[in-house]
Image (cartoon, rainbow, N blue to C red):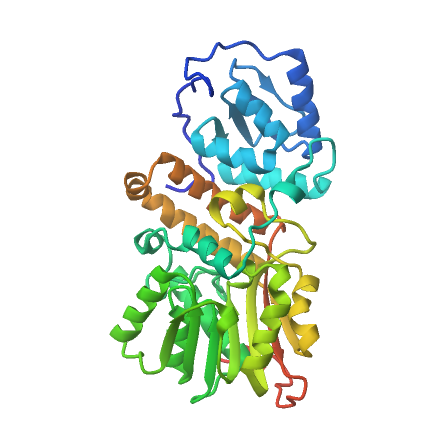
Length: 425
């Protein structure tokens, strides 16, 4: 089942009182609450969404066709949503105290689009974000805890909806719209390899390797030797087993350690999908790691979710899904390169490719929803549905970007004159 274009069934029962557990008394919506809700809708840009209250009253503040209806099950959920929508929408949706009737994807996109237009202005903007939702620190110890809470929840869970061959948990690349997810992930890895102009026998260091797919691809199809660093024990164990099975253990080394402890001299540095977990405070340290790791004519590529303007990660995602996450702007990312005189050669934005990747992930996730529900619980099911669908909305509305940044030493003059090598058959 996909949530795109379909109504999400309303199956959540009336909620008991949050404090006493007793059945709630269905007091009607007050005039002051009605006024506050209209102010709230105005503050988030008056999206074409209706609000249905616990007593059946419908409140709207737009003059367009309604995309979806947000059911607010109780008064506590109402005030929590108005005070802190950044965090509480996710929490109360996961628990069933908020429900969306209608096209869930279009609902999220409408809310994101309206919020982007207003930039969160008004009396109900996310007042607490800059204090309460700063990313958890990505120190050596903090990074380990942050990564464990997301990536070590079980390889079997990720196998349900990632590509079968390489388990790439990063943006795929669709040079042709009709590609399968498996084909598009191979196309992404090949796109990265071509940008890096890998040559047989070269050495590559990878910061953050996921389940090890890119390292195995580079070794198998481009003849390089790879050392990959990752602090997720589950992922490293999986990657080592796969490299052994594929006969690549002599060319790919997986190191269970932090990127800050990278050692050695390499021709190429690559990092796909890790910068989001580094934190801007650690960009100078990452730049120093790259500088000391690359040979005189070294080159590299960083692939990362980003933003057009500096802004914290959604508070609910940072607290409940992706602790420590922060997508940088290009200006912020330059703190990696500028102090070390690393020349940026090319920047490509694959924003819509990530939206399509996420659509494929969500469709596969929904197809396996019974397994997820039996293995975890209903709140987990709803939370990850919101996470995946909300991420689609963030990319389709331009709240998030996907940058591939290619760089090299400034004295390297052996550079291609055009991009033709990227697209040759």
